[in-house]
Image (cartoon, rainbow, N blue to C red; front, side, top):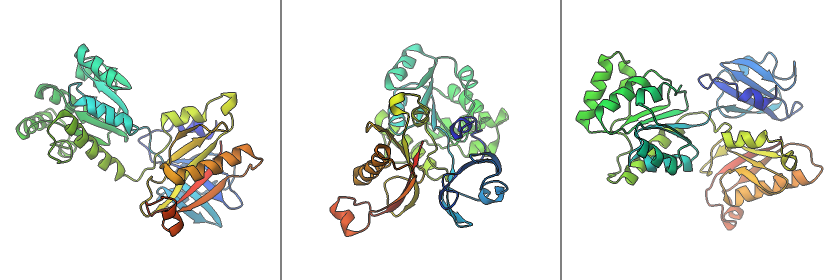
Length: 340
């Protein structure tokens, strides 16, 4: 199995780490570790054999050992936004979630509102009673649950089911009294009080939101805050994986650009990826602007020349040259360009 085949089989509730040697004698070797165990390596009995202690405490970023420079990526899976309720508040949540890369799944038992969620861009709409719909959602460490139903009895059904699932976030809309009654009822039904205590209520950041659109912004802002406080990197979103594994003859060769180091106020974080094809098309972004244009040109040159070696590129956005080019973020990034 290839590196990407194994990626798709990983349990998202485990601590999964991808490691690549980016400089040194063993440059290009890759390995996958799950809960500290080596589960795949590109070179049998290669550099990573008997090195399970290497990544037990590793986070995403660069690591140097035995004269080798490694990039460790604590993998996150596709971020999923499970929205219970398809009313007016859910529509902006769907749209914003899709805009920032979440897969939006909506549960709504009223066909008219389920259709509205589909039109708003939900990746999946389950038009069934909430308990039945939630039985089809497994949940994992990258699943964000939002409860915005039309009544407290539906809130209770949803929270009872969700409290038993693995999750990154649970938020519930409603007045203080309504929320208090729902929480108490759910705990009486056997839910773990510690899980219920960590439910985000009132949902969303306190920005004085009033309209459905403003409430949607407040909710998604809170979810972004929770997501970005975690240590996992961006991982390999579905669209990127599909492009990587494409058998299209014209896109057979490609370069994957990954931010492996970040200091200062660079626009995107460690693990952000962009896939570049020989025809000049690409999937993903590493922040746009001059930085992305520079990396894009380097990747294109590799694809259109006989340069078969992967490269580590250093981009400094802090100096006078950077200011003149309009790179005003003031950060420093390292980007690894590798053949796929």
